[in-house]
Amino acid sequence: MGSEECFKNDNPSRKATILALGKAFPHQLVLQDFLVDAYFRNTNHHDADLKQKLTRLCKTTSVKTRYVVMSEEILNKYPELAMEGVPTVKQRLDICNSAVTEMAIEASKCCIKKWGRSASDITHLVYVSSSEARLPGGDLYLAKGLGLGANTQRVMLYFSGCSGGVAGLRVAKDIAENNPGSRVLLATSETTIIGYRPPSADRPYDLVGVALFGDGAGAMIIGSKPDYPGVETPLFELHTALQHFLPDTEKIIDGKLTEEGISFRLDRELPEIIERNIQDFCDELMGFGEEKDYNKLFWAVHPGGPAILNKLEKKLELLPQKLNASRRALADYGNASSNTIVYVLEYMLEEVEDDWGLILAFGPGITFEGILTRKLTL
Image (cartoon, rainbow, N blue to C red; front, side):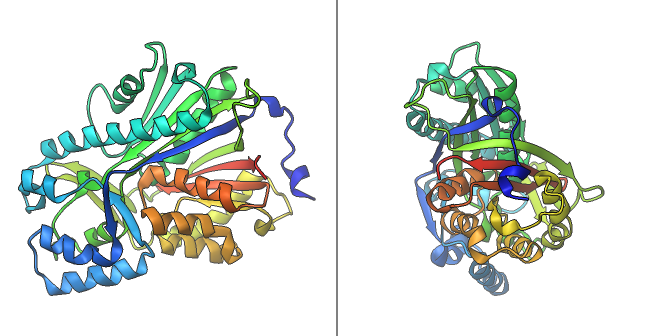
């Protein structure tokens, strides 16, 4: 059975499509080769064992560059952010709330420009972030910053972690397909300042985040049946979308908002748990039946880390180039949480030849998010 028959679409005019992609970053570029010395200097810590551990982690993450909001200027203004045991959640949220809004506005404007239509044509807004907490939420401040109409319908997804970008895309897909003529702006924005902490021998797992995570924002425009031929250019057509959580895995990706910001921990078992469950999830998503040649698909996978990508590649027996876009995004931007799938999809536009594929992400729960997708720009 060929892929076109497997994924036959009864009503293509109603299928949601991604019409544009955009991204934005803070101004602070971090080179991985210089991160260790800068981190220990900025936090005024000199533990040789922890420094050696972070050096090893930085080499294994495959990250080369990242963008971050944190800067020496911020640390000079708020030195308590680098101190152990000091209540700093207010200061962190003051910085984060402003930073994620600024980045989300910039990414959205970039996306709208590529889309080719006016921001006034946006009917719905889906906003995703695990880096802020306030009322009203960041969705309202983003809508205000873009000059969206007061009747723009908004949805907000908070603290979905690394699966938030694909979760937001699933929600935007449903909105677009059930509201004819609608145009949905999906915006994601994240910063690690909410969890920035000094190194501690009591929390060696914190160093994984220091070595892996980055900041930034992403945006997409989603709509069905493009109304403006020659203006709107569909990039990806979104088909089946699934969300699935694995029972009794709530503590594998564990985060808590405390007086010192977010305390975050990834269990060592995470890559193995994903490996054990990924094939059944993908088979259900694809509806393949007996056909299981994964190498006939493209794979837009959120790069949670090299271990997750390696386990997925091994389990599904993927050719090395199948995860190239995910590995490029990880190397260039680090794991930027919900934003990263936007960066992966941008690289997909450059290099993918297969027409059908999967968009995948894994987040707290453990939650699997996936969308069966057809690339329209072959």
